[in-house]
Image (cartoon, rainbow, N blue to C red):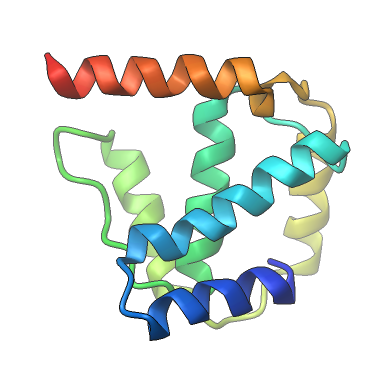
Length: 128
């Protein structure tokens, strides 16, 4: 469940007419903060971002599913599921299992170095 402050910031962005990706950025930021605080970890920076985007979709941000060439069919399916589940309460058992699994993951995914490397890789991919 995203924090109330995060949802409020995302709604404020929506009221100001900012794009859905900007609104979703609030959830990604929250996720990075959680990892840095030691609340849980992530296997990679990409996974940490994906968790944030999933939370955004479930919180009702009108974020489109990734384009065909940009993501695997499984990722696209997951994004569509998240959009459908917007507003519904998450399963307590599933949520606990997810948290337990993420606690075993490393914390380096949200480091400044990892984020910088990821940004450079994405920029290179978009350029080429």
